Structure formats: structure tokens, C-alpha cells
Image (cartoon, rainbow, N blue to C red; front, side, top):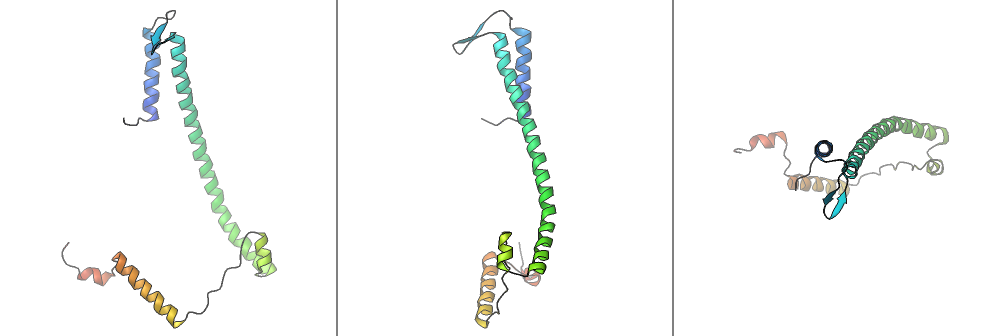
Length: 146
């Protein structure tokens, strides 16, 4: 069964409500699935559904607004955090103890690369390019067909 949109479900429930008020006799009861309902009870259930859809719409709108607000504040905090970390490093020095109080660690300094490490890195890079079939501009120009 295909999924319907909230707008379509809302329109269907509204149409049922219109049909109830137009066609069902107010002081009569109707049997639906072995239970008896008055037109007011049936209409109340459909109205409750429409109210739930409206609440869902407003909750989603509030969620979207909250996400936009959080992302805006997070972008502002990134710059502030970088500046604060730099200021603390200048003021207190690059000490693990001080930065740990803020939940940060001192960035590691890269060690000297050995010849064996450089060779291994180059081999890994070639293997990655071969596995992904990555080509440079001139290599792509040499490819014929397609």
C-alpha cells in the first residue's frame, strides 16, 4: 500500500467530516465493525486525527527552527573555540594539564619521516589509485572509446 502525504490524509479526514455532517442523521446511531457510534462520536475521532496532524506539523516546524538555531550557534562557537584554545595556549603554555581541564589535548607534532615510511606511503597511494581506477588528466586523454 503506498504511503500518503499528511496533506492527503488531512484532506481525506476533512472530506469524511463534511460527509458526516451532510449525510448522517444526528440523533441516529450507526453500526461500524460491530460497534455502534453516533455521528458526533465518529466526527470526534476524525477531528482528533486532524488535531494530531496539526500538532505534528507544528512540532516539525519547531524542530526545524531548533535545528537551524543550533547550527547557527555551533558555527559561531567554532571560531570562538579556536580563538579560546589559542589564547589559553599563549597564556598558560601548551600544557596537557591546562588543556585537559577544557577537554582538549595538545596537538601531536609530526615526527620525522623515515625513508621506509615514505616508500610505504607512496606504495599505498599507488595501490589506492589502482583500486579506485583514479587517473590523471593526461592518462584520461590517452583512453580511447567509451
